[in-house]
Image (cartoon, rainbow, N blue to C red; front, side):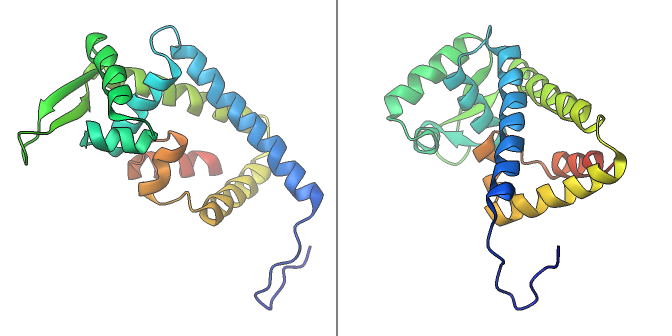
Length: 178
């Protein structure tokens, strides 16, 4: 299919939308399977707290509540449970002792690492069923889609619950192409 050269995008077809929706359904399934791997240890809202803390780092309770779109008391209760479970710790801020900073414990990091590794393995297994040339094309198309959605910047990676470390992003790009 010829790309428009005038800078005006061609109309989006129903087939294109349908194809992306089916792919999104598959990716949501992969994410849901990963959540199922850890649901015996944390609830979905607790997992969201852990992901936000893992990907944003250096959050205090107010920033966490704002990121989650909940009242600080709700965020505080979720944090209390995660602290009790040994997954999250509260420490005094080095900048303002009135603020408590949230950070994952080694057990919390291990849970998040397990979830991410499950997702990576599931995606790699799916990609392994595709011819190599299609994987390269898909990786390029997915990066373009992510860029169009504004999801390739480190600051926005947390929205989907993905780590924002540049080594993770580059590792994922290398794996997707090969």
